[in-house]
Amino acid sequence: MPSTLALSLNPAFRVAPVRRRTFGAFVEHLGRCVYTGIYEPEHPSADEQGFRTDVLELVRELGVSSVRYPGGNFVSGYRWEDGVGPVEERPVRHDLAWHSSDPNTVGLDEFMAWARRAEVEPMYAVNLGTRGVQEALDVLEYANAPAGTHLSDQRVTNTGRPESHDIRMWCLGNEMDGPWQIGHKNAEEYARVATETARAMRMEDPDLELIACGSSNSQMPTFGAWENTVLTEAYDFVDMISAHVYYSEKDGDQASFLASADDMDHFIDAVVATADHVRAKLKREKRIMISFDEWNVWYQHRAESRPPSGDDWPVAPVLLEDIYSAMDAVVFGNLLISLLRHSDRVASASLAQLVNVIAPIMTEPGGRVWKQSTFHPFALTSKHARGEVLDVRIQAPSFDNQRFGSSTSGDAVATWDEDSGELTVFVVNRDPATQLALDADLAAFGGLELVEATTLHHQDPYAANSADAPDTVAPAENTSVGLDGGRLSGSLPAISWSMIRLARAGA
Ligand code: AHR
Image 1 (cartoon, rainbow, N blue to C red):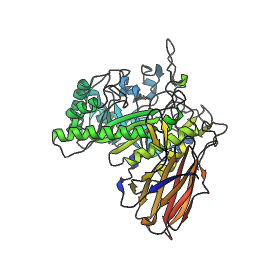
Image 2 (image 1 turned 180 degrees about the vertical axis):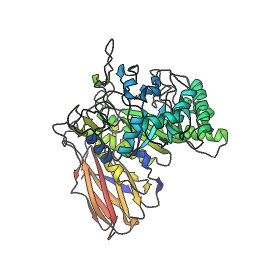
Image 3 (image 1 turned 90 degrees about the vertical axis):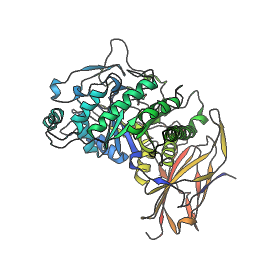
Image 4 (image 1 turned 60 degrees about the vertical axis):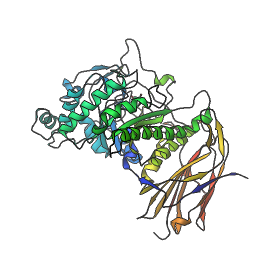
């Protein structure tokens, strides 16, 4: 008898509307994300601005909604003005964060031109590591002020366009709690500069959406206390607090890795609790939301994550070019399930990163572009999560793992679009060994019919795609899934991610 994964679904189990911003990503001046990633003027597919159109096509197919830029650790030593104006006059600088050289060929205006072509909303991070209030105001004036000021007139001259960039989401620094960060601060120091920067930025434009740095991950020794201190001071001036997390299989502990989304759930719950504690303490109405602006699988201990050293300061070195397996894609798809499930408080999220650097899209300099395994759960979830997020009650066996003790073998979330009558279920079997028999009663949705059932699975959980074999790990139709009298059934192999689409009969 196979073990059963029983899902209880009801259109009344509403969490929040699906937010497009859940499907954001991240482009940092790091490794080959920008140079030979999104930008490579010598590439045969490059457009007149030097952007790779083969990459642009995949970014659109991925369904990315917003893109955070320009860092990451990079931003904490970055001078934004190095990247604007005539390209031949721009300085080459050492990027201390990644021990690389940046020719500054791509800067704010190029990124905005690329964002328009990619049809994504920008999210811009200011440098609160080596810089402060004035430089944040300067880049805000350059980017957003209507023509007629010193810096906005420079923008008009540089871009040849009268329109402002109109960037709405601004990150107040990056991972300022991390001792690795250039200009690292303690919570009190950061709370001061973030509050003053936010206050001043709002004097320029009160409607900006401002994001304070939360903890770099939930294992930081200051996690919780950091959020409390920062929000206690900055509460009235910010809209969101950031969260970052990366997971990987460590020391062969596959089971704990497969259960990673349990940690993401706890992480989000803890940040929400802390933000709401501050809200109660300050007696405020407003709720602080979460910008989960870095999340992914990342094998940080591998050699490819080690920056160059010594006298070697290369431009666009191969860095953080993780190759993702089928199992990575299942964990990744489960992280998206966790983010969606928390749509009531996660207002924005950014997959870190977009191209080449821990990325769903890989490129060869001068050559091919290909999809990693993680491309698929992201693209399908972004495309088909519509309407309202529904909480799904789960009854399933569990599997033991070192990190959490025990985790349910299955996890799921659903979205329901009342208007179009489309129900989509995203479900993982994250059990390392046991196939699950899916059983869900969908009678509460009225007459539905099955549209599509697709499963990402590989008999070798470590199988991965490459430029030569780009479809080794890809979703395939799951023919075992059926709908009979309102009852959904099917079989989900161990270590698999699935999407099941249903629609109102006759719609
Ligand atoms: O995404 C890679 C790096 O991870 C970012 O630069 C930094 O913010 C985080 O530590």
